Image 1: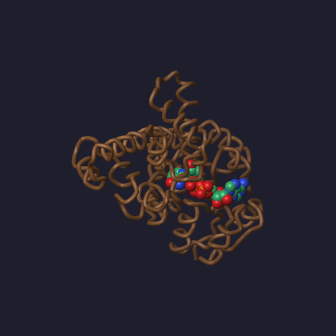
Image 2 (image 1 turned 120 degrees about the horizontal axis):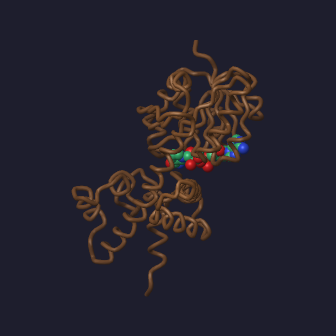
Image 3 (image 1 turned 135 degrees about the vertical axis):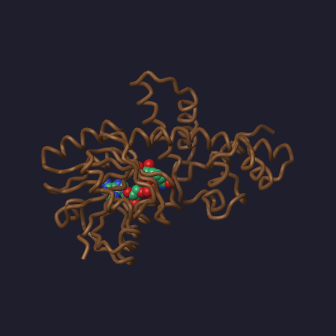
Length: 290
Ligand code: NAD
């Protein structure tokens, strides 16, 4: 029988990921500050704990999927454990976590993910793993239950580095697709037809093809569900902020990354924080002059 795994953070992503571990036969003990999210996992067969410490007391493998660095810093596990942090946080925080963990005989790997909520549900995420080779190998057993690609990027923190680079590009491309769709509609083009043209042309990208921000173009994506679920604009703002810190510390010019950061910041400040980030399409529509 597989050993019990701890799982902390059962939101849009973590909820699906935890269910996939259960489906693969791993008994789970879970924690989240949200009672609703805990109940969903309880119904799926997980054991519920009253605190992160209670999770850690009964297991030696823990997965965390929390919003930000500050939440991840609160996670502790017992000596000899493997901690797999799948949240998107500052690479330097992952490095500090890893060295504190090492002092306690704990192996820490950063393993942020890409693919969105549907890929989390379908167990086909991409994991970008930073950590020692043996940590990567040990983590692969669990991560491969939740994803189809588990890539070792290098030392601890490099998974986060890959992730924030990806999300900087995603944040930019979603704005680009949104302003393009909006302009095309203004010019009298049918949105579905415009998306079809883009997706057979050189403007094609994930934001146009898999996650189109214009309502009604695709089924089963947040834009066709009033931008509910998915990846919140506040979380995208956080990721672009991480990319901007990294670009500052490495003196890398990222003018579009900086502009994208400010766009999602403004959206978040205007009540879009909980909506999926593709709602930038709706936000642009609302900015139009008469
Ligand atoms: P979410 O806000 O839906 O879920 C976070 C969960 O953590 C919530 O259930 C919340 O109640 C819980 N939580 C908050 N503080 C806690 C604490 N102190 N202890 C225990 N639980 C706590 O977020 P999400 O969309 O699932 O994203 C989680 C992480 O994954 C973020 O770092 C995000 O940037 C990243 N990510 C998200 C997506 C996506 O498409 N949603 C994709 C890739 C990566």
